[in-house]
Image (tube, rainbow, N blue to C red; front, side, top):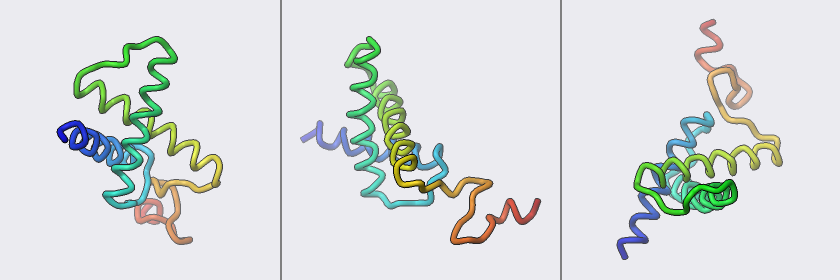
Length: 102
C-alpha cells in the first residue's frame, strides 16, 4: 500500500514540475500523476541504459521521473505538433500578457 502511495506522490511532483519546466498549461492532477509515473518508468529505463543504478533515494527518484516526463512531453509535442504556452507562446490565438507588454 505504501509503494502505491509513493508512486502517486512521485508522479504528482514529477508531473507538476514537468508542466512548469515545459511551459504546459494546466492539465489537471490526474494527468500530472500519470505523466509523472510514466516518466519515472521511462527515466528509470534511460538511466539503466546509460549505466546508472536502478535504485536511489527520494530526490534521485523524483529527478529521474522529471527527466523521463520531460522526454515523454517532448516526444508527444514532436509527434502532435502541439506547443506549450510558455512566455513567448500563444494561447487561443492571442498573445500572452508578457508578449503584449513588450
